[in-house]
Structure formats: C-alpha cells, structure tokens
Amino acid sequence: MEETLVIDRIEGNIAICENRYNKIIIEINLSKLPEGSKEGTIIKYLDGKYRIDEKEQLNIEKRIEQKMNDLWN
Image (cartoon, rainbow, N blue to C red; front, side):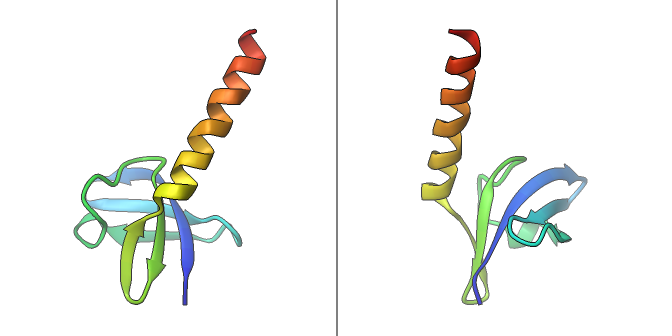
C-alpha cells in the first residue's frame, strides 16, 4: 500500500511525519528514511520502503515560489 507523508520535524533520531491525506502523525526512525530526508521532505512508503517523492517535492516548491512571487510582486 502506498502512503504519502511529509516530514514535519526531526527530534533526535526520529522524524515526526504527517500523512498528507488523513493527517495522522507517525514517528519514523531516521535510519529507515532515504538519505537527504529533512524537514519538509515528501516521502512515499511503497513496497516496504520509504522513498523521496521528487515529483511532488518539486510541485510543492514551485507552488511556494509562485505564492511568494504573488505576495511580493
């Protein structure tokens, strides 16, 4: 089953993540996450592994950039 999460914050060696669809908070040991995971990273749990969702991450970054441009211009 595929699950999409966003890393809300990191506390020690634990990532506090929020499910993007049902808003449930879960804790994941950093050792289980892909290299480069940090606060704000979008990850997917698929086939027993966590992976960074590069496409969704890029979409969010573009939306944030557009909102900032709209706000300041």
